[in-house]
Length: 312
Image 1 (cartoon, rainbow, N blue to C red):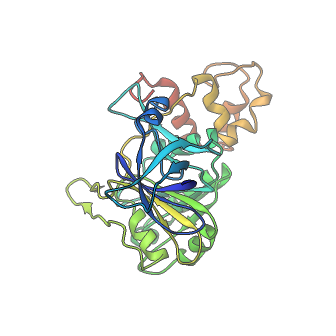
Image 2: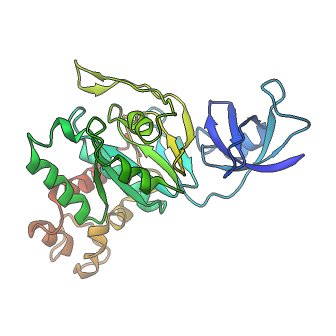
Image 3: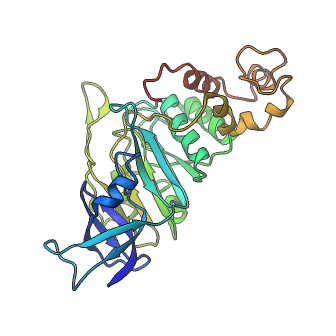
């Protein structure tokens, strides 16, 4: 028997498949030929991939289905493996939305890291929702910083949703935005991805970690890539907390095109192409000086240009 199903869990060399939208899980393994054909990434098959499989009888752990082919992807999110400079890792595929979760504090947000994820989503045409988590811990103390964050990213065209699990704030709105969609939940370690998933559907039990008091960084809790079905409708892909995010297959001259606020004005630059660094009459630099483009976002862009190959 042959069929088509979606990868809902990646445990290294073993997978769980389901014929979405039906939630009927069964085990599968990867045939060596597929592994070689897609050897450009550390993982030839990603959660969210639609695959063609073969199976004789009923799938069991001792007798799993065999993945024969990975069908063409609508989109995907990929990052450079920071410890393998020439290899990349596909985080997830065939996404309706990337939910990028950040906390201004506990742990403190790193805007260059966030901007890398956003650039990658722009490159691979994945819509983005930015979720500010744990706002109950800092919003009253630093309301101006919360508003400044919103101005930067809403000004760039990204919706921003504030959430607090203890107060129940934003949970219903997030649940509604995830309904009927395949959603990737991503962010740095400790920002509360797994806790938010459990808040969306208390019947789910993703691993939940704690913040290291010594370094105020999240302990690495989620080690597997896994999709969950939400009782309210839709699916959530939980990912390991990321500590680095390198850009893949992107030339330096192209990077500015994936900052929406830069793309909107760059046609007015005097020179084409323009790096938006030293050229005279640069519309992007003028917009930064006038406050129409965030200086923080512009500095993230400069950092991507100046990298010495650590992530590229």
